[in-house]
Amino acid sequence: MAIQWYPGHMHKLRQTLQSTLPLVDVILEVADARAPWSSRNPLLSEIIGKKPRILLLNKAELADPAILRQWQEYYKVHNKLRTLTISAKTRANLDRIKGEVHQIAKMKDSQRIRNPRALIIGVPNCGKSTIINALARSHKAKAANQPGVTRQVTLYHAQSLDIYDTPGLLWPNLEDQEVAARLAILAAVRDEVFLPSEAFSHLYPFFRKYYASVFQNRYKHAMPEQADDYLYTIKETFNKSDLETTTLMILNDLRGGKLGSFCLEVPPHA
Image 1 (cartoon, one colour):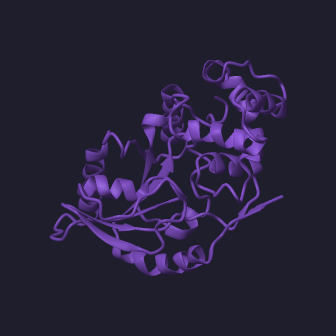
Image 2 (cartoon, one colour):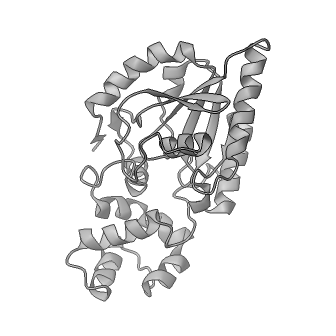
């Protein structure tokens, strides 16, 4: 069953972008470094056309470094994309963003007088507003650890760079259940849209394959074959009222980095 979560402001955003795109030099596409494929909007290329693009894999401090390196190589070889792994929280590689944007803008117009203009875009809760605040060294852009906080396109001045902030943009039908589950685990989709237990169950085989020891160290139990059996055991151990509450505890630990660094997917053929 396809997950339907496409608030009205997202439809209006697509229309607004068409009038904003001619004003900018570069697109800053932000994805979550823990899901470098699933947190990218597949409709973005259609929306932005041939506008120059830089892919920013944000929240790199929370991502599994070995798998993240595989994704960097994958995009370098297969997509020919300028890709930066960054952390708005620790400021890792943030200074490189301005350098890359200025380089692209200069190639477009070497006699430019005004600041380069970038449009930052990505799925909900990938950290767009936090990146802007870090670049501008201010707290002008609203940021929160939940989807749907930014609701309109807004222009911010980040010293030598002007940035248009946009609301998180999803696509109308999340037909791939594993992609939807990854977005739910990363809080790009609200918990009431995709139940935490369903999201966790979809990705349980992946966690069991790649991070079984991490889960065992945190929750003191080995991971059996079935997700429900595991959740029931954790529920009893931690005296939770039901499986949804139990799963939400685990997801909050994942989202907050309490299980260490992780990724939710590996590149094809990895």
